[in-house]
Image 1: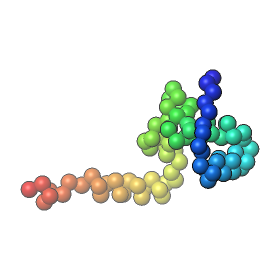
Image 2: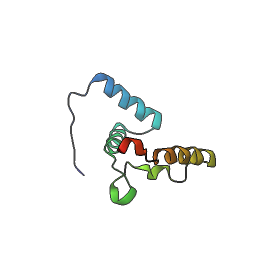
Image 3: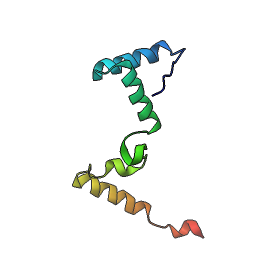
Image 4: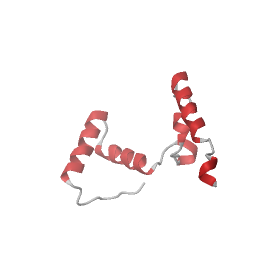
Length: 85
C-alpha cells in the first residue's frame, strides 16, 4: 500500500474528520480512506466501483413509495403533442 502525506488541511476539515473518526470508532487513517472512497464512488460493489444510479434503492421502497414514484414517472412519460408542432 502507498503512503500519502497531506499538508494544509483546513482546521474545520480536520475537526470534521476527527469527529467522524470518534463517532465511528475508527482511526483517522481509516476514516480518511472511507471518506475518500465515498466521495469518489469507490467501493466493494461491481469490481470496486460504486455506481451512482438507482441500484442502491433496489428493494428499499415500500408499496406506497413505489406507487407514488410510478405515478410521477407515468406523468413524465406523456408526450405533449402541442409542444411538438
